[in-house]
Each structure stands twice: as structure tokens, then as C-alpha cells.
Length: 371
Image (cartoon, rainbow, N blue to C red; front, side, top):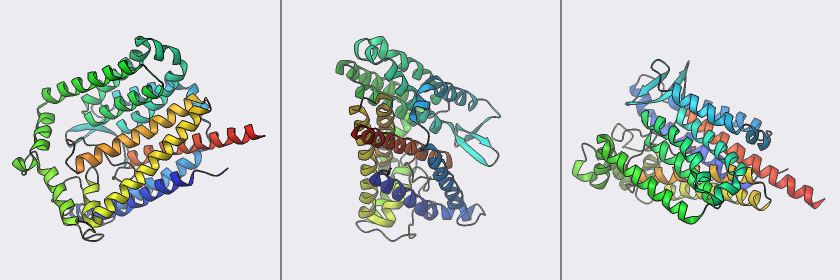
């Protein structure tokens, strides 16, 4: 049975663009560290190949297996979040303890947790459909569990991942038809809680003030954003040319990770940035269409799984675009399939592999019904 061509095209196009721009954006840093210029590219390419192998396996795994082990995903996510906080197990980079090292491989725990949460919440919504739609306790129970996850994520600290996890969960609950008044109240509660977290944390407050007035603190809290805006400004409409970025030469921090979009904007200009945005729109649109088809066929677990993956990818893309363009405060979220990071790439591709499996199951059921 044929895989979704639009989804495959957008996925592989984004993966290819990511590899090209990881090579371009990371070369100055790799040379400065005494490595080959393609040091980071080689590592990303290795994870890309591993990701493709993983997808080749995942598309043959029925989603019923994920549904049967709903609590296992919760346990896996919780154990990883606890382990990463243990000194000697979790590794600290740039002041955040988010990684567990297995030899040369660094695993970013929050990336796996996002997928675990989507799998758990999908199973919960299927098992407690009536309770979620009719009782507030049915809505609050999974959120209470995820609150523990949120606290553990904030201890790393990883505020961006916390926002993605809770926002994705709320989106899935909305598709499960929780009452609109509860949905609005939960959003308001999330906004208020986020506000408190920002104002109670000096570094988050500094990021917010730097975002609001970046040019007033362009050599301090607004440095990353001003350098990102300079990159987009230099790129103009057509860009300065592939590999010709100036900002990647130690002007823009995290040029190959969180701010890789700014390098794309500088080298390919507005046209390249809009092309990347278009690929994401196709990816998310196809994901939502796959989810809707499963929903109409009453395959609720598949539907919520596909909704969750689509919301997660879409939200993370929107936040990263917003941060790079100065529309949102710096969150430390990677651009899916493009930013450097082996574990994030592997998990993103695994999630899209599950999406492809849902699509195959939709087509198999449709073909079976025709007979």
C-alpha cells in the first residue's frame, strides 16, 4: 500500500534542508574546536540514517501495541526525567541538565518525553472518553500527572518543553471534545502559571525584557535576537548565497541549533524561509488530515496519536519561527527535522513514522471495507 506522498516529500525535504544547513551553520564552530569542518554534519547524518532505519521498522508496528502499553510510556518518561536530574547520570550543558550520555551519544530526555506523553494521553482519552467530555475530574486527572512531569522538566530547567507538552495535551483534549468552557479555563490557567514562572525566575524575566526591547540591550539579554534579526536583514529577499553567512562566524550563538532558521534566512533570504514554512505547512496539514480520517473511521487512538504528533510538530515550529523572528521570547526549542541534535531528530522522525503507520492503517481499513 502506498505511503502518503505529500507527507513523505515534506519530511524528506526538511530532513535534507536540515543536513545542508547544519553543515553550513556548524562549520565555523567545528573548525574552532579543532574538528573537521563537517564534524557536526557527520554526526547529524549518522542520526539521519539511524532515523530512516527506525522508520523502516516503525511503519510495520501496529498502533494497537502502543495503546496496550499506555502506562508504560508514562513510566518511561517519568524514569528518564528523574534520572536526568541525578548527578553523575544527567549532563549539564549551558546551565541546563537535560542530557543523559551513553558513551558518545547524548540523549535529550525532554524529546522522548514529548512522544511518551502523546502516547499516554491518546490512550487515556480513548479509555475515558465519557469522563473527559462530562466531568472536570476526567480532564484534570491526566493533567495532574503531567503536572509532575512539568515540575521535573522545570527542574532541568526546560520551560520550552513544558509549554509544548501541556499545549499539545490541551490540543488533543480539545479534539476529544472537552467542553469549551473548560478548555478556555485551562488555557487561562496555563497563561497565568506561565506568567508566574517567568516573573519568579530572573533569567526568564531577563529573556522577556530582552525580547521586548532587544536593541536596548543588544550586547546583553537581547544579543541573540538582535544578531538573528541582522541575519534576516542581510538575507533580504534572495539571500547572500549558500554557505556565505556572516552571522555563523561567532556572531550568532546556537547558529546550528535553536537559531538555524536565521542562517537559512541569511543565506536563502525570504524565499528560502517561506519555502521552509511551506514544507512545514504541508507536513502538518497531512498529519491533521490523517488524524481526521482515523477519527471519522472511529479509530480514536490513531486519531489522537496523529493529532498529538501534528500539534507538537506544529507548535514547536511556530515557537522556533517566532523566536528567530523576534515575535516570541527565546525558548530554547529546536526546529523539527532541521536543527542540529541527534536525539531530537531521531524522536521527530520516529513520531512521523508512527504518523505514516496511522495513514497505512487508514488505507488498509478503507480497502477492507470496499471488499
